[in-house]
Image (cartoon, rainbow, N blue to C red; front, top):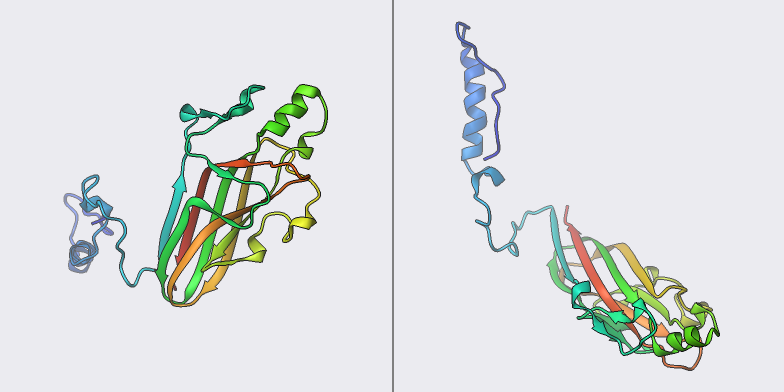
Length: 228
């Protein structure tokens, strides 16, 4: 039951109106007949948050992976602070086709409704070729960082409107000019009734022929079902 304050406050010595008193009692009675709120439960009383009312207007689901800086591992290079790769990071090989990002797959069941999907990922593009260019003083950062594109995939189909950057790899001329780079994408899309698999996917190409593997560190996907 929520906190309730009487509509009609009474004071000592004042006349009490029967209708006003009933209005005050009615608010409390309505709360006690099933209209319960967070004030009725002590902390951590509800441990299962995966079940919801079939008449729910909004249903939220999400998945994420946090890679802690305190758990960083050596990437095997020696040049700079950028060599530290977070424990739990996912390696994405160069010239990869659409690859699912670990820990960002949702399986949802929904009626015919709108889905609002958001996805984010932190990329780490440090590699041996980049270290070599810094050591020798040759080349630009963008010559040695891979071209990365992230998108949302539903039931095995990549949504073109969610692809970050160019839809086709040859529409990108150079790599991201940063060692660490966040990617984000979002879409509002109608979905048919049934079960759907939603995930973040990533693809990589290289400005040259050299292998430019990179890493996915923190990543998250969120889906909001708007049912009514």
